[in-house]
Structures are given as structure tokens and as C-alpha cells.
Length: 338
Ligand SMILES: *Cc1c(COP(=O)(O)O)cnc(C)c1O
Image (cartoon, rainbow, N blue to C red; front, top):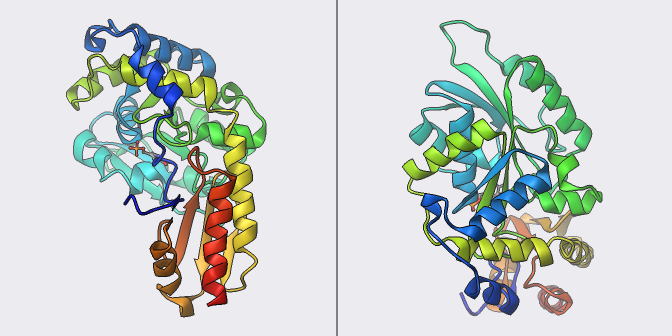
């Protein structure tokens, strides 16, 4: 896929910068399964402190992080409540059911991305032998690049508390939400017992996510990580990339958001494209059916990468600069001229 000159497919396509590679090369390491890797320990302690939680665990992926969280909140035959389009329900290969023996209870999203509070509450099962035991509610924020309101998270937290349920945040892009809101990550994640954050998305690290939360949950997650084959050895090389990302790549997410807006405004100039204005770094574009796949195929040939054709997703990231946006918009203009 090296023919892609303008790569808007995902914020996971970033390559580690020279500075990040240097930090990785120089990382002090040890055997993390023995708890001996000082760089991993530093990353975990730093994330726990940043979020004001007890502990954290460094894991290979966001998928594993969410699975560890669900397995730590739930026992076999328990149930989690999540959105119908939540990544941990719809995009993680059914891992919670397959590997955790945990049953999902999906709830439809409303137009604004939230779940109806009454529907959440109605889905919580009574204590009765007929039902799976509802154990945890999971939210995702940002959700499809949208920032869901802090007040909504607080309302769901209140439901979780009243029913004595755990509360998990899939915050793969939580830092994008915080930068967009101008809010610190500690306040943003305060209502949650566990939070999963990806280092490999907008933060630009090559690999890794961190699960942060209550001590008992992280202790269980450590055992589950080993069981799932996620125990890593001199992983300080990877954790160093995460620490570098926290130092250099958080505030600059504002640049990604600004460029997403510029891109969205540029695309919105064409009546055949229905553009949803972005809160953060993800732009969704509904392409008029008549254009079919022609638009996407044209852009692909011209080296513009994005996901989808009827409904396109364009994502800005570290390796997209102002010229990338200008260049891609020039190709879009060329299509509509021709
Ligand atoms: C990417 C993503 C994940 C999973 O991360 P991987 O590292 O790709 O496994 C989980 N949740 C959300 C919302 C994501 O965007």
C-alpha cells in the first residue's frame, strides 16, 4: 500500500518518529513478566497517576485491554451492557463471549451516539435464576470520533452506582476527547472503575494500550493477560514509545482536529458529498449513491486512502500535515472537474 500518498485510512497508520525510535532504542529494560522492566513500570505508574487511579497494566492492543477489563469485572455467565456499535461489542471478534464466557447486552445508539438512559436501566437484569447477572456497563468516548458529553457519562455512572455495577470506559481515543473539551484526563475518566487507552492511535506509538483502574481489577487483568498470551518480556522498548507519546503527542492532537475540520470544510463544498463536521480527528462523508464507487476508485488511483465508499471515513493523524490535506482536496477537486 505504499502507493498511498495521502493516507487518511486510520490514525493507526502512523510510523514512529525519529525521536520516538531513539527513545525506544535507549529504553532501559527487564523481564516484565517478572515485574522487572523499569520502563514498563514507569509507563504504568505514570498512566495511573495521570488518571488518578490505583494501578495500570500495559498490554499489546486495545482489543486485549477491553477484554481484560470485561473479564476482570465479570465472572463466567455474567453480562455486560454496551452500545450496539461499541468497539468492544461489535469489533472485537466476540472475544468477551468466546474467551470470557460473558454475555453482551447491546443497546441501540441514539442519533447523537449516546444510549437512552431508560433503556440502559431497563436492560439491567433482576436478581433471578432465569437471567445472566448484569455486572458492568461499558461506554466508549470518543465514539466514532464524536465527543459524548461529560454530563451523559455522569448520568450513566449514576445508574451503575445505584445498581452496584462496574463502569468501564473504552477510551481508545480519550485524549482526543480531552483535547477537544479542554479537560484533563483525570476529570474526564473520574467516574470509571476501569479505562482503556490506546497508545497506537492518535498518540503515534507503534504498539500498545494501557488499562487503568482499581487495584483489584488490574490485579485480575494481570493474570488474564498472562492467560491470553499477552505477557511480554523486554517490553520497555514499546513502553518507551508510549512514554515518548505522552510527552510529545498529546497536545498536538489539536492539530489533527484542526486539519480534520479543514478537510471536512473542503469536502463539504461539493453537494454530492454529505459531510458530518468532526468533533475530533474523524470525518464521515456520505457519498451520493449515483457516484457509486467511482469517487473512491478515482481517489485510490490518485493515492488518496480512506475507508469505505458509500459512507467514507477520513482520519487525520501525526503523519498528515497541512500539505496532505491540501493535496487530497486537490485530487477531490480534480474528480469533480472531470
Ligand atoms: C482501535 C480501537 C480499539 C481496539 O484497539 P486495537 O489496538 O486495534 O485492538 C478499541 N476501541 C476503540 C474505540 C478503538 O477505536
